[in-house]
Length: 320
Ligand SMILES: Cc1cc2nc3c(=O)[nH]c(=O)nc-3n(C[C@H](O)[C@H](O)[C@H](O)COP(=O)(O)OP(=O)(O)OC[C@H]3O[C@@H](n4cnc5c(N)ncnc54)[C@H](O)[C@@H]3O)c2cc1C
Image (cartoon, rainbow, N blue to C red; front, side, top):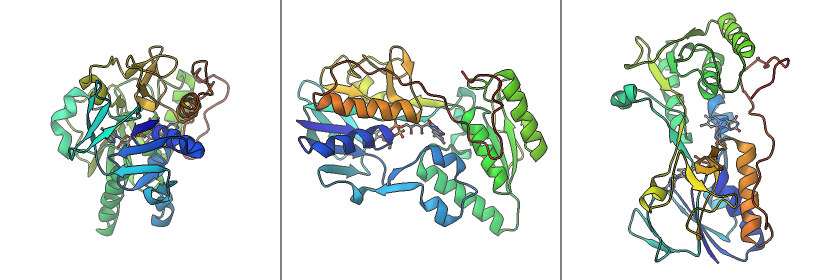
């Protein structure tokens, strides 16, 4: 079969590498990325690292992939012609497929009130984002200044970023819309413990901050207010989308030739935007396409890991 995968994050790469093992299919991976495959979870701890350690976030350059996976890197997939089973790339190139896998992941979600200020703040969603932020950090340090950062969003990623910027020696203030930190994954007692940890370090947290303009005066602002699955390709092709691309338990969209996997895939009205369920989806999908998995994908039990330096989530209460 001709299998075309869009996206080279955890989802797309895991499917591609699993399919490459059998070498029974013609696999093409299309990606907008240029560096290679990298660990997204490590991005939020990418500030305090030496240049040498930060370089290890890039786990595999595209030229190190098995020859049986054809890689089209640094290019966007623009259009799906479902009747012809064609994927059109931004340069007009057309890739025919028997099976198309959408592993397009997610972008940073920007609150409406801040959208107008987009050129003036950063997000942390890709290796390029991290490299830009590291350059800003180094430049301020080079001028003999301690950079002052505002992190908008006190959820999982905002708190991880704040913790790492502090470790890098910078000054950090968190602006959070809610009344407690990481409210989606922590209970009230655990949020309080995290607040106490940040207070001891001198990381200020301001609550109830539903911002309509950027906080001042700070050298740099990072907005970390959630993620938005990249559903555009599917939507324009007339496939059902909700928060993500709607798929059944076989990760199949309403078009039997098109599957979705990873952050972008919504199964049973749920998204699974974490490493463990995504790896499980991707390996299951490769098995399914090899004709070995006949029953649908079921989510594995998993607990999101919270990566705050020197902070252990108190065990007494359960993480939802
Ligand atoms: C800072 C940060 C920290 C995180 N920490 C953790 C953690 O500790 N634990 C955990 O479980 N999860 C964590 N996550 C979440 C986890 O990293 C993601 O759920 C996972 O990486 C998603 O993988 P994916 O392959 O679905 O999508 P992505 O990694 O988003 O990959 C999608 C790829 O598709 C490409 N693409 C999109 N559209 C197109 C197009 N039209 N044409 C070509 N290419 C396209 C993009 O360039 C990208 O390479 C973190 C996420 C972030 C951002």
